[in-house]
Amino acid sequence: MTAAQPHTAKLIDGKAFALGLRGRVAESVARLKLDHDLTPGLAVVLVGEDPASAVYVRSKHKATVETGMASFEHKLPETTSQEELLSLIHQLNTDPAVHGILVQLPLPKQIDSHAVINAIDPDKDVDGFHVVNVGRLAAGIDGAMVPCTPLGSLMLLKDVHGSLAGMNAVVIGRSNIVGKPMAHLLLQESCTVTIAHSRTRDLPAVVRGADIVVAAVGRPEMVKGDWLKPGATVIDVGINRIAPATPEGKARLVGDVDFAEAVQVAGAITPVPGGVGPMTIACLLRNTVVAACASNGLPAPANLAL
Ligand code: NAD
Image (cartoon, rainbow, N blue to C red):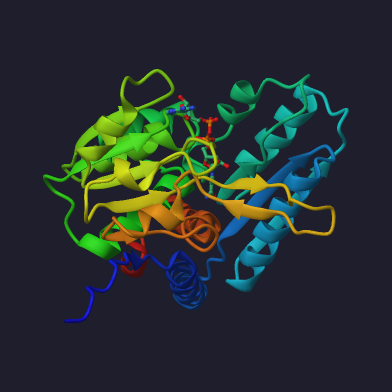
């Protein structure tokens, strides 16, 4: 008799899915140019010199240009006042070539991020952080701009399962950027949703009831294999940098889920890197095309639907 093969979860390839989505965005952009003489445009605003933010802004610019869209970069000094930034936002709100506005966070401490985000025209708020879009998503009103990371996570889940109706979903983390919008999206898909957080009692027991686990915590490898219901689908949003053990070593990225353990129990799981990460920019591009269509009275392209 041969020993049974150890179980291995299906890997959810976010990198491949994101590449496909970016291709569909580029097709839609080409169609809009041809049929409607419309070039979707994304404006990205960076204030200050934070190196990580500069890297994000550069990759957003590159990805935008690659799809054939117009990219407008605005780099402002660290000393920029709130009034100066608000004046740029107003200018972008009224610029017909700009369909999406993204202000890279975090902002320097003299600037109130909420005031800036809520000054963006909600229909150009491609990050989905404006209170109007938060409200539209919570109320299930059509036309909400949905935050990119949860939107990308939902796309991966729907790719695995088709319908999510009736499934038990546990979202770990309640941030405005990931956890809360993720929970609303899953509720809209008719999941039974639990939002767990730092004060949740007996988190492993809560997670054990889940058919879908979305981990958005920021704690390296916190979710263990024996927390999972066998066959569960695991979406690991966490991106944690682990310093090298030796000075010559390389830093590595891990998620919020202990991948080596979880892969032996889960039915399907996103790796880190290469899972949710690449979906964020792809969804930003998708949201910009959808915003450009809406502002010109056109329906969202069918190939970019959820
Ligand atoms: P956050 O710090 O704003 O929120 C973390 C949440 O985790 C909080 O709601 C908190 O209640 C909860 N939490 C903290 N400790 C906990 C514990 N011990 N048990 C249960 N819950 C706990 O973080 P965020 O912005 O939501 O990001 C979460 C993670 O996702 C981070 O690793 C971040 O780097 C990553 N992230 C990835 C992307 C992407 O593009 N893939 C985008 C955004 C965030």
